[in-house]
Image: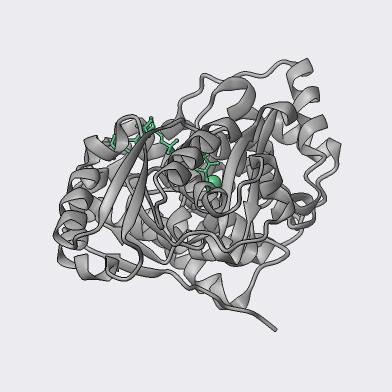
Length: 363
Ligand code: NAP
Ligand code: FE
């Protein structure tokens, strides 16, 4: 038995916003554009969107203050701007942070509730969402998830709702050209992590497993350009496609303990999201090889490797070797990620404190 649901219309290709401006018609008459401090402008996506909205006679206001790993306070601030301006459409432009913030704002704009209640459900339909990724990693443009930082939990937490799938996503690889190499690498590894976790998940679905393997293959084709730090627009298109496909995968399977454990590294150590996942992936494959060896074997094959150690070496090469964790830090992180019951249940290998501790020790 499986379920497949993907309500986002994806328009991909260079200049896709300008070429498909009419797609925005009917979605709303006044938009709030939600973006980061620099990502909207540096990528060129904000300019393209503003020109297209103007052509389509859609009014807009701007919120350019989304933080990396946005907090509840940050999305509350943006939602106040949305309500004060009575917008009826939310456009997220940026990496996963602005896209996830846009989703939370779309809900809070129609539900005047404290942001913490996003996790407990809400009454009114959110505003329609348009997503323009400027990183190739989270796949948030095609997922029903929004992840935010919760200071009181000392961690990050996502909420999920079918209503926050973007209605429309514009994928233009040109927008990722100005990404610093490190961000390109980290975000590519986030996408890989989604494909691997989704492929192995206990909630895995036959409907998306080939999508996961195709996403992994696209990553594999990008390994040399990532190593050399030289990415053509064609390479960038592949990574953006890999990210979108991996987003479709996790939209169906959810993520696993890798993401939950990684949130500690981001919250306490400031390690970017994709980097955090990448530090844990080789150990994760090793544990799961004992439980689902054929599936781990297929992942390695798609990556062009025969052993997990080759993969571990690639991660070390791409991510560097600067992170070290003390015993006390590991204990604290395991305490927190042990609460992630759904992610633990979604991991084929047992994930008691012993396995989690071992995974952190491999960093
Ligand atoms: P990000 O936090 O959105 O952005 C990282 C950095 O890259 C920021 O400094 C950003 O600048 C900059 N940047 C973005 N696009 C750029 C461009 N085109 N040119 C130059 N700089 C650019 O990173 P991310 O990895 O894409 O997103 C991570 C977030 O997504 C995390 O909160 C994670 O939990 C979440 N996530 C969500 C899902 C989901 O399904 N919803 C899945 C995985 C991860 P600005 O500061 O100006 O924005
Ligand atoms: Fe992720």
